[in-house]
Amino acid sequence: MSVLPLYAQLINLLAAVLLLLAFAMLAQRRVLSLIDLFAAQGFALSCSTAIVAYGTHQPHLYFSAGLTLVLKVALLPWLLHRLIRKLDVKWDVEGLINVPTTMIIGLILVIFAFNLAVPISELASTVTRSTLGIAMAIVMLSFLMMITRRKAIPQVVGFLSMENGLFFAATSATYGMPMVVELGIALDVLVGMLILGVFFFQIREQFDSLDLKHMERLKESE
Amino acid sequence: MTVAGFLSQLLQLAIALLLAPLLVGWVNKCRAWLSNKTAPSILLPYRMIRKLFGKDAVVADNASPIFRLTPYIVFGAMCCAAAIVPSLATDLPFAQAADAIALVGLFALARVFMALAAMDIGTSFGSLGARREMFVGFLAEPALLMVLFTASLISGSTSLPTIVDTLAHRDLAIYPSIAFAGVAFTMVSLAENARVPVDNPATHLELTMIHEAMLLEYSARHLALLEWAAALKLFNYSCIGLALFFPFGIVVSGTDWLALLGAAPALIAKLLVGGFALALIETLSAKMRIFRAPEFLGTAFMLAVLAMLVNLLLGA
Image 1: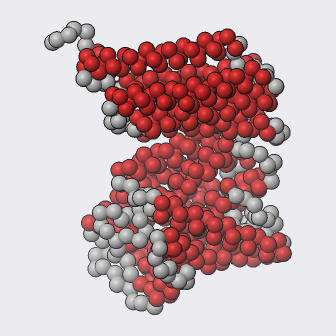
Image 2: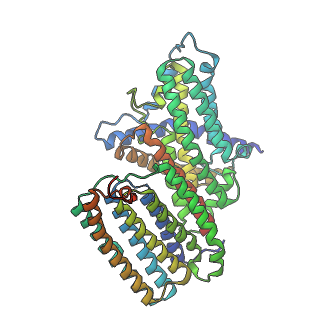
């Protein structure tokens, strides 16, 4: 077995860490810890992007790494923390399915994603192509998190973590998207987050809670 | 099998038998130090075993032969396991008789007989302990198997000596799968050896004890054997962990006596560090509610499966 260069090993390690963090988010009960985990995921993503940039001499990836660092490690977690303080919602997150079952469903998703990624990563020619499966697994696990959570804030965190997964997929399959696209996506995420923040206030105003099951009813009074 | 190989096998078994109570003594000493208490002598488990062997055994009237046989079966299973697990050298003649899966089977055999014996007398504590032990065991076993499968995938064999040889002699690199498997294995060992997050080895509080509840009816030489077997189990788990995740210092040929002489201090040093780490984990964590154990062991299982998947995908 030939040994990969050190930077590729580090990328593999960070990919594994990202997968682990996705599972940790899936299992996390507290909202505040969930946001910390999201920040950690952003940090790991930013590190891995920077390492890809260093290893493959793609200077524009440094910008995306920096952008990730500013946006997903500092700005978004700060915004979310502020939102939680203002809305005063530090409750434990109740999932629809209990934690061990969610984990097992997550494992099945990971196997599915890995199998899905094998033919695609054979087409790619990058050093990091084997991490594509992990990126897809992160996307699917975030999906699962959005499905199994009832409250609004964990669902938004799931959405943001899905974006992390997509970003990681782009880096591992093609060494990142063009700068313009990346800036656009970053702006999208930021604006989306702000709008969702406004939504949170509106939802709570209407239903006195951030539990989304209240929104399943179509008529105002029954 | 040569005479020298046989001697080396015997030597390793003797070392396991002798060092096991010492390891328990060392962990207890570290635990006492870390919680700012006066530490008991490191030789205390030896004295305990000697004292117990000198006493007359009391057996309940309604005890069946299973109750009397269990200490010998459990102790025998742990001795067999100690003969398979490479501690000093990987060249163990006996290890060809059983692979990693059979090793898990040996642990399961000991567990089943412990549970049967605990239920045999018909006291409520015994059956409570047995039920909890099986509850923890059925969750821990798949995770342990998955950890061993990860190691087998890397080396292409389920035989422990081959696995350890492959792991000890491959290129130095970062292996995320081994790191995951290591964490999973630590969690499983804590649960299997009745250590703090799952069970407290020092407690006799009826609501929380698992392992101790099964031993309540035993006395004298039976108890001594069971205590010794528990120490051997801890020693075996430590040796599996050290051999899989820190396989430095293990020699290949068991008949190269000079090399064995060098491997022994390495093993003792690793066990000292490992025992201290175990005491540290035990001091830093609080005992979980019993119904949290599925979550704890579910996480271990998940980590072990992830290790296997990551190994398949990344080849690292």
